[in-house]
Length: 142
Image (cartoon, rainbow, N blue to C red; front, side):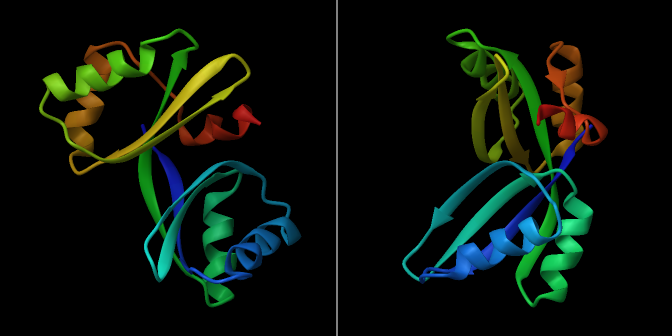
C-alpha cells in the first residue's frame, strides 16, 4: 500500500523549478506536497501530486530528469508525538528510512517516507495498526 512520488532532478539555478511547476500547472496537475533537498549544483524535488503517472510522462517528454517511486503515506492524528510513535514502530522492526517529510492537512498529519524494504515496512505498518493512505485516495487529501 504505497503511493507514487515524483523525484525531479533540477539544477540549482533560477528558473529550473518554475519550469517543472508550470508544466504541471498547464496539465491541471495539483501538487499535494513537495520538498527539496539540495547540494551546491543540483536539487531533488520530491512531489506528491494528483496524477503522478501523467506528471511523470509530461516531465519526461519535456526533457526533465524525473523518476517515479513508491513511498508510504501514513495518516496520523494531529497530536504531539504521533510521528515519533510511528517512526518508533519502524525502528523497533529494524526498518531504515531513506528520507521522510511530513505535513498537516485537514486536521491530520501525513508522514511520507521511503524505505529500502517495502515488504517489511508494510508488515510492520499492518501489525501496528497505522493508517496508510493508498494511491487511489491520495487526491482526497486535496
